[in-house]
Image (cartoon, rainbow, N blue to C red; front, side):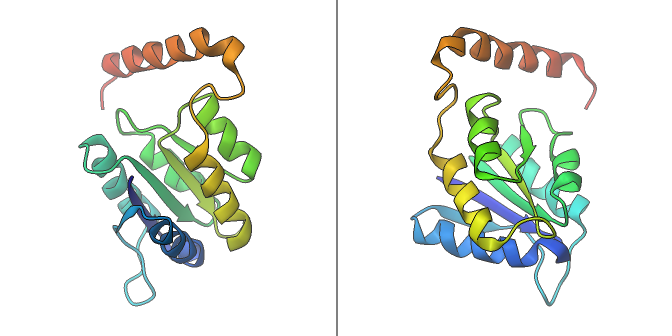
Length: 155
């Protein structure tokens, strides 16, 4: 899978741990910014990552800042990008099962690298509607309705 990673200074430790972990799992990882020598603003690197998802250059993204919230706000401005703040393994599973999130955002002030990697693994291995099979029709229709709504909004 092609996965983009990015971080601001508060998410740098998490991003570096995630980047190594994803590469070890065999994913194609593209780092679009934020390092010790060249710190990045969350809104700049989140936009670069979201553009890669939107343009089909990447399948998913993991974005790390202080809380994950700023990155999610920016990424969700891009049509076809569905970013969820993840603060636990359970929220990682649910953002895939319910919302089919293609981007997760992690907070360096909130998560340890150990917990972040567990959440990333859960997000990568959970399918849309997994564990919610009785709601499959609704959840699939919801994605279609959201895509239609996106088409009506100015981006």
